[in-house]
Length: 227
Length: 227
DNA sequence: CGGCCACTTGAAAACCTTCAACCTATGTGG
DNA sequence: CCACATAGGTTGAAGGTTTTCAAGTGGCCG
Image 1 (tube, each protein chain N blue to C red):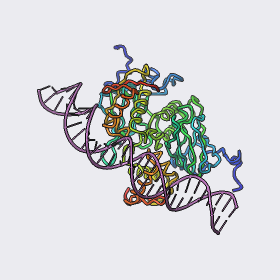
Image 2: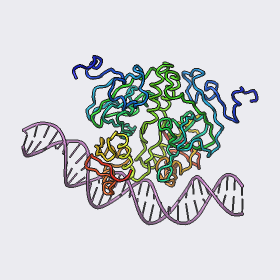
Image 3: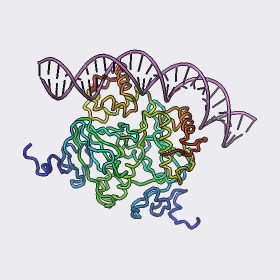
Image 4: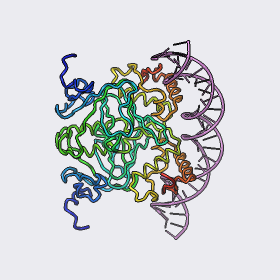
């Protein structure tokens, strides 16, 4: 224990190292096709005690991979409430979404004593290098159990439907915010997606209509009200 | 319209082309940092009528990007029921998960008349090339609204909790399937994640215990029964 | 015109949440 | 080592929401 490589002694307890030298690298990268030594540069961060926070929501982007322990991901909703949206176990990625959004989407807190490594993503647009790392990350990302569980889970049916419509209208590229648009799904499909009975979707749309939050006629919807 | 490039005439109606030549490429790749001409090779597939299926669950991996229209993603559960798990709009990816799982995870069906392009992923392990494409895909993937919406949404509380425990025990690397393990989350956090009140989680665990589906004592759990 | 499918509406039953009390572990200070 | 404080966990009863079942409406296409 006292004959560690010098590179393990940089900083108080964070270690710049190469995944190829990590005894637990199989957990993170699988046992097939070990990456070339210089491909994955990870820095082992100081260990996290139970309850310690690795990421705050809104922080600048950073990407970690869990080495040991378990992290809980939480989002703070605009109304001040908090929800757990995910769990990360050893070998899983934390914070990837931040690179797409420009900021961390969720807070990450150690549910048990944990250790993580920070991954350095090559600067955007750097071009042709790092292909192997990127490929690994892409597959890993696609394999991840959940991106961030439906934040509407447990909300009342009316709010779930409202969130669905809102989300859809933002993703569909509408010319103006109060442009009428057509829902591509039947009420049954919307219900199946949101975990609601079709009748409940109908009634929820009715309530939203009555509350002036949107105007519904058949499959045509127009957003109304603030938001 | 009759002076199209010869490359647009290959096959009945699918077109091998370069995203840089596509008038709608902004929708797929954004307007900043256009990719080098040869980087993204996409093949426009024959148009999909409303109701047509692009992907069947279990098919070999394939990756598409939606050009126009809207696709619904559905999973068939072991009990025969189906659930909508996602929606894909223009510019969004369909089928990425299949590369991690070795097979398509969901079926994709056109909710409205749609058009898609098939993307050719460089063969795994090809190494240093294609970095720009991979980087784009990684960011796109991280930005995608949902990987596959919570498949437990709408299930009774007992089943949600059961699914959570089962999923956790599979992700945690346990030595044996009937090894006891410790849940890292409080009942309140599990409830927050599943959209249930903490008391409901307690009662659900009670029911599962009583039905011999698992043994719970405090935070220690052991799986029992078939699975 | 008939059939089908999506949508709508009403009433009863099932389920979940809420509220309130109590219990049990764990850790801290005396 | 005990007493206490605290956080997490458990249990019961009341009330609200959602599901289910049933029936009926409206549009679209053969």
